[in-house]
Image (cartoon, rainbow over all chains, first blue to last red; front, side, top):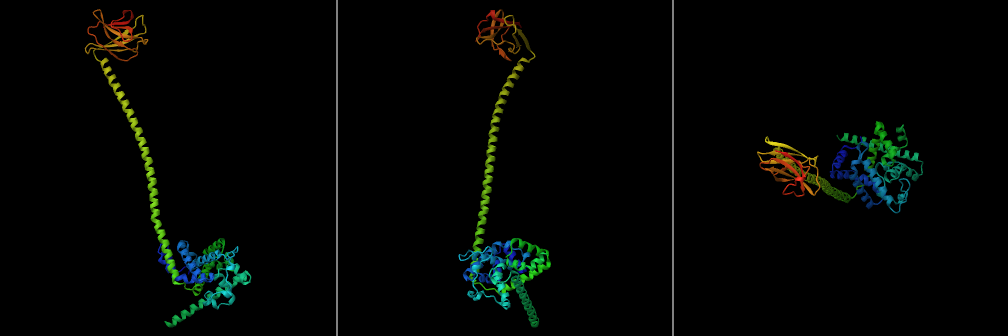
Amino acid sequence: MGADFADIQLINRLEEGDNSALYQLYDKYSGALYGVILRMCQNEDEAQDLLQETFVKIWKSISQYNASKGRFYTWAYRIARNTTLNSLRNKKNLIQNDDLGVYETKVEEENQKEYTLLKGSVEKLEPHHQKAIALVYYQGYTHKEAHEEMGVPLGTFKSYIRQALKQLRKTYANELVWLSFILETIA
Amino acid sequence: MEKKRILEEGLLEQYLAGELSTDEQLMVENALDADASLKEHFEQLEADFEKMAFEQAIDPPGRVKNRLMDSIENMALKSSNRYPLWVAASFALLFGLTSFWMYTQWQKAEQNFNTLEQQTILLKERVDVLEKEYTLTSTQLNQINGPNVIPLVLYGNQKSPDAKLVAYVDHNRKIVIVNSQGLPVLPDSHTYQMWSDVDGEMINMGTLAPKQELIPLKYIEKAESLNITIEPAGGNDHPTVEELISAAPL
């Protein structure tokens, strides 16, 4: 498994100065990253600027990406998350916590815009699993902040995340079985 | 041990989000490198995480890509424009350093050249002097070293008992040369003078200073003897017989 072979080729080209490789990576990953950034900052204009900033950072620091340590998306996700959190921290209405936390920045659930709601397989998860995934991976909370936000012990919260990801794996595996079945039927 | 802790504490899920401290991150990465089953578990987690991300994807407006492309091309242009500047600056620096080095070398070479030139002039002067001295010595040696040269020693009488003069007489070439190194020094008011006795008449041969190696004097035909007197400075037309200090027959 590990890093995608096509991605590695694009990254090699990018490292050699071929900027078109960056635009191909953008075509592939901008939606996934924009989904994270927009859900975190809840502002389309700002999210678009941050997405651009994220890809500029990717372009500048591509030599630091190490395919043996993980997928390109994981690396790019961390850049997008940190870029967004830094931007949110710099806003005047933020009260910075001593951790990575930006409590005051978190938008109340009732004010959340529709596009920020999670969809697909995550939507089918139990509500507390869904919320745990949303807080940690789509709203920029640390595990420590998120368990406080949900009002459950840290260990319980961690098991929510583990169970949620396990559930998602099952869903994806079933989807794969169904897809294979359909393909075999068609063939 | 670490694997157990990583799995129990959900560190892989936190590592995925990039929220671990540097130490924890390093510990997880080392454990992933060391344990293939943990690595496989993480890769599965990453794959699910990516699938979830694609499910949650929201397409950004097309203008974002256009802005990104403009921004990247501008930055690439600036960095590529900077490249020739750096190259030019490097060459200028190299040229400057080389010029400075060459200038100092040139200065050093010029200084050496001037020193050498001065030394050459001094050497040439010395050679000239030596050449003159050699020519003179060689001539004098030739004059006193001929087969027909008669050497004569004139000793001082009781008036100047320490006086001694060597005379070289060559009748064939009509030369008289004397060595006055054996004559005592006289006061400035007086000088030695030599005379040839021809038929009882003293003929002037010239004055001579003491302490000289070779002094040529006038050769007088048919001289019967050589005589030395002490005369007033500048010499005398006639010898002061009372001041005769030496005489030798020829």
